[in-house]
Image (tube, rainbow, N blue to C red; front, side, top):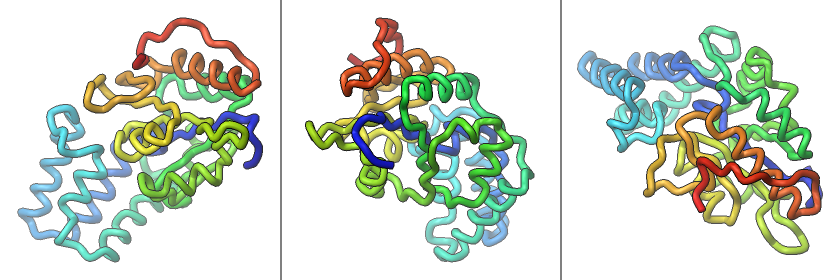
Length: 247
């Protein structure tokens, strides 16, 4: 991935491109196998409450955070990793009922028309990613996959791999789309990039665009990326919708 001309759009995987509770519940089940009865019950109860209403449990960034919090100090690093990989192998085998968010296919197509590079950037290992994207019907909509990205700390290496810094100006020429502010939004925003946060609006969690679902931000994402590609000498011009944008 080289050159300054192609604006990069990075998509998170779990909770952004791939929706459904099956993978995280399988991860929790594998973790519970190492816990006593009370520990397992506490994990399952906390996870169900988070999945039912995440905004009521702001101490967790996502459902995987719930599982990891209950595994910490109780499982070894190897046990926790084995539990996670078990869930990813099940994902690869098509065990779970997962789905793409409304608007994803259209967004990928419209970003492609703009000449943007559409890249999956996830902390997940490669296991199950291509297979799942194919089942979701969006594999062809991505120009690349960066697995094991180690977000948030791994973003500098991801940005380097994407050649996302314009050589002439030093500006960051990319957008990150995700549902986990700490991992997907904050580092790219701090580096000067554009961001789209799938979340209820929260002034303490700023992003270029924020909306509860991907479908609600598709037009704004396309507008912002069109403006960015136009500024870089690419195709496209922005309109003035801007319903979900932070000014």
